[in-house]
Image (tube, rainbow, N blue to C red; front, side, top):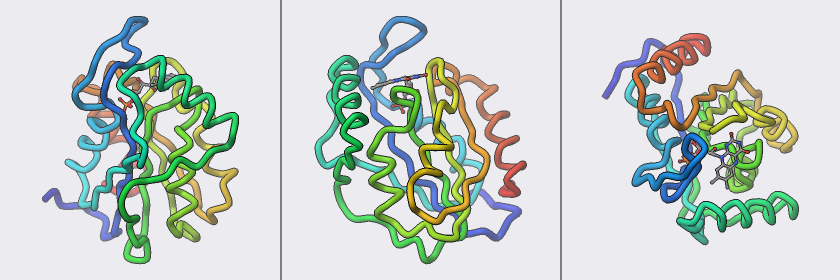
Length: 181
Ligand SMILES: Cc1cc2nc3c(=O)[nH]c(=O)nc-3n(C[C@H](O)[C@H](O)[C@H](O)COP(=O)(O)O)c2cc1C
């Protein structure tokens, strides 16, 4: 268990979809999703509880089918169901919310999660992996949800680079800036 300088109680919740994905202009099939790798870099560095957000209706392994489903969910302002229970946030001071970028914003299941748990008054720091869009509209996505959270600075790491050594440096900087390392 890594030790954290801060005595914050931190929850890291993330969604990540392995399978066929965009990779440097082509496609690659990943056994472990990029955001899961990034979540691991973060949880290796700080003392936090980790929750993986699992869709009740899993996303297809096919990239194109997932793109199409996501467009439908975004256009319909959907709240895809989450499998299993949700964490009780009362015991946490800070929440780190991780996801890929889908069509320039987090997947709608992140809205399901953010609205279903009680984030009011809590600092929420988003982190994402992406191909070209960086954070995209991540910050306004979370801000526009009526959660009462205080949104902190986000971290964006390119999915194709999340397994490179430079990703750890970005994570260190982000955690230090947030006072968590
Ligand atoms: C449905 C879908 C939509 C995507 N849309 C974007 C996008 O708009 N901009 C972008 O930079 N990357 C986009 N990507 C690429 C992912 O953000 C990127 O590959 C990410 O690292 C995947 O993380 P994961 O493996 O944890 O799911 C998209 C990927 C998928 C599957």
